[in-house]
Length: 152
Image 1 (cartoon, one colour):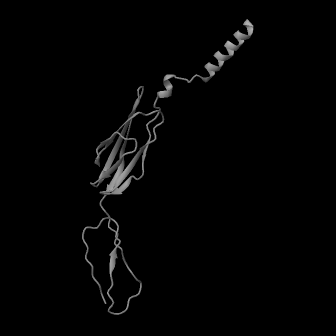
Image 2 (image 1 turned 120 degrees about the vertical axis):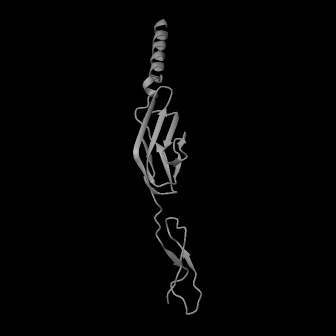
């Protein structure tokens, strides 16, 4: 009977040891900072969404967006607007209780002037003589002025 209790105790101890989570400090290490954006080239006034894909357990984010609004963020996937043409760098600092790492991508975001591409639509493809025609502007690039003209 003593022998079977001892064997049962040993089996229980082995089972507990096998199920124990490995709490070594390497579990919480951030191995590499990685981030991406949905775009890298935009027109002034457009926005970009950034996402952290760092390798490891991240608990805190600190983004710095040169030329962007907001200029900083503590979110894992912030949205940033760039209003002024230029080339900008982005920095991401990530940390947890045991690790802190930083990555800066220089000349990462390129913001250009708004490029207007003119276009328009009409309600019908064919009109009768003296029928009123209505045109709708479908231009891209945020035009700020319009000058419509027609020729017979």
